[in-house]
Image (cartoon, rainbow, N blue to C red; front, side, top):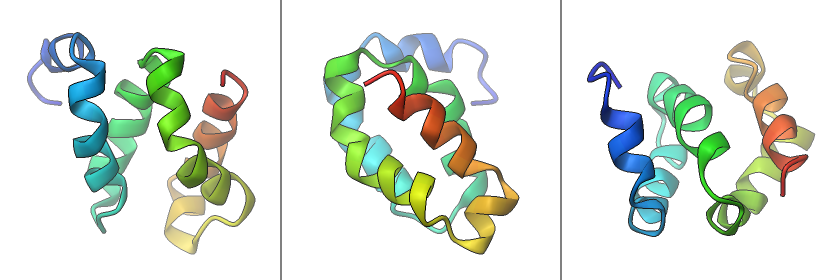
Length: 83
């Protein structure tokens, strides 16, 4: 995400990036997850965002300590409102 055009390039390929973003969200890298949620998932087309519903619901309803600290529950709720 340090590359300024990265989000626009990645978002131009929504179906191709979904599995890779899912891998990121399954990782233990909180910074990577934060960027994925704030710069990619929230901006994906609805058809692509739906594929993250299970993860987003879990984070919105039962966030881990780290997810609460990074306010993932708030962005998850915001994204869920759009799908």
